[in-house]
Length: 71
Image 1 (cartoon, rainbow, N blue to C red):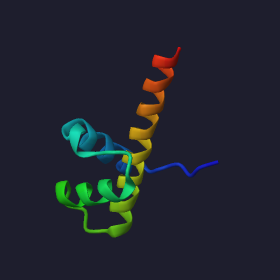
Image 2 (cartoon, helix red, strand yellow):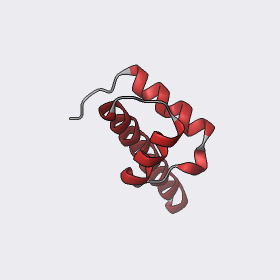
Image 3 (spheres, rainbow, N blue to C red):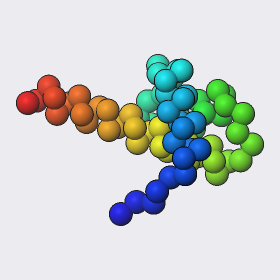
Image 4 (tube, rainbow, N blue to C red):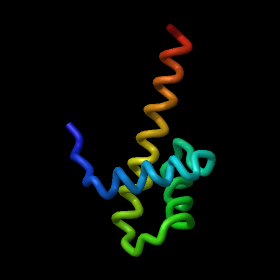
């Protein structure tokens, strides 16, 4: 079972995804660089958590789309 992410990480990640949907992929390393460019986050830990949550959301969306096309 995974850990529950704090609300500020989820809200920041969702806001970044909503504003810049084409900047993020399912690669954590690329998302980490994009988050560093787009948001003023002084903490490396918070930046990595936001990038990880964005990666997770992107992978979920892709899996959902594949499931819908297969069905």
